[in-house]
Length: 239
Ligand code: ADP
Ligand code: MG
Image 1 (cartoon, rainbow, N blue to C red):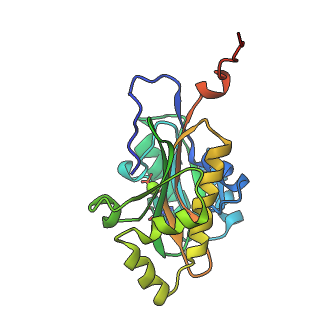
Image 2: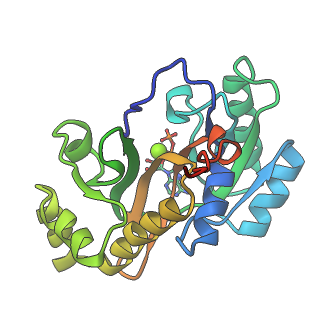
Image 3: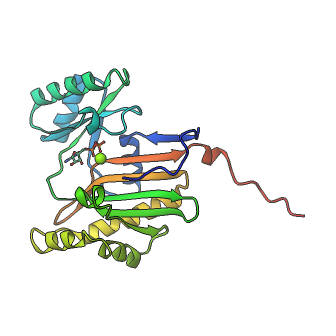
């Protein structure tokens, strides 16, 4: 969803692996799927058994950014045989892109409302938070709301209410029920994470799955500017 505002020629931008992005989110108390990383099929099965079935397998590689595009997302795997098979399929589809690709094994989150929370860097306004309801609302209707970081709770609320897709949120609320407060907590958590880590230039949490009692980040793509930390602001020498 987040379109880069940076030229392709920029040298110091790096896409962070899903596992590392999720660790950083968890460190900031943003709820993500539990996961393990494995390099071979035996390890993948051991990880799946540790997590408990059903599980999800996806490729983990800096060369594979959009995992579904390469047929790499294997959902709802119910036993060791299915993990074995999925591991083989994933490796077969990504090894020409990255022979060192690994897999990430994660808990399968129950279906719920799929929401998107992103962050991008605007050349004029700086860090900006984006939010929208997943699926056609963001992809076809471009129904996305924006807010400046640091974000306050009232701004986060306003962002949600200004979405055309807000009726979907309300509908879910009335029907099965979704936890809007959990969604707001993630938006505010992302705002804090980005404030504390100015090297983050893009973030795409797509989707965040929202339920009656919780909201969980299921996929995370982060872009950092590696030049940032090693390139401190020039110190004013005074005159
Ligand atoms: P990508 O966006 O790189 O193609 P995702 O990790 O977003 O890959 O997976 C694609 C879709 O699969 C998601 O939009 C979501 O619907 C589903 N999905 C992915 N991981 C999980 C999970 N752990 N639990 C439930 N559904 C998932
Ligand atoms: Mg995704």
